[in-house]
Image (cartoon, rainbow, N blue to C red; front, top):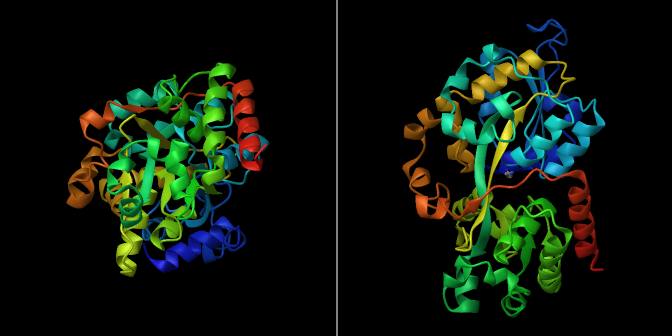
Length: 379
Ligand code: N2P
């Protein structure tokens, strides 16, 4: 990935770009958009490292809509803004499991599907699966999806365990006798209980969707045992940390790890990175495009959603961020090295072991948060 975009992404993460409208002059003298309200602007809140570098400029050129693009790296961050209301965003990208709860909280605009003709391009099977949490696909459209697994430095793992076989099992990070060997080269885990607790439960042979506090306590105990060996809790810095050789293992997201691999290769720094979906099974998630109810530029959000669903745009995004999209017609336009990579597009036998996340009821969500705070602060 290009350095300039990384810097822009980092600045946006700090909120530096938010104030300058992505470098533009806002609504170009107040020209009203089709919605007649706020003009030709669009405020987007997306995951970091999650769009091709040309997508926004090309959309702006094609439509005259000026995009302010901010990024986040956790569902918890988006949810806080959405539930507080008046987020100022016209388009947000929560994961499906969070979206289910946000729909119940009434934070989204029901989609006017007549404004998204390219919805016809979306994989109907995926829509059907998603409808379990967004009945009738009323509020959201799938953007990209992926898995959560283990990213690792190939040479370091060979050095420590003799081969990379160790990375094919969650044992590598969840067995204290293994994790201790990784302590010095550095383990990072995603900074979210919503992923790590279900991953730990699944590893223990428990239902990853369990809402039983005693069962969730087993995941907490497991995580606590390996806590001394975890260097960082972070959900975006690990891309560069892995690529630069500063950490050797991450429990992270598929496309992010592949981006780390590609950044290291581009830098030609001798660091080899790989991603594994451990054999005990791993999460599969979907990130969803949705319009907050109080969006000032909803029509521009519709235009952007429709643009993202063009096969050539969806393919460009997948080629750049190495996450699969929801548009089957884009597939012939995606690099063969990506479609042929079983860690990006899991083959059926791996797919069969993937699990999705449940929509957590509020009391379990609170238990997750408490567990996480205690884990991080080492109580
Ligand atoms: C993007 C990470 C994907 C988000 N950097 C996981 N839902």
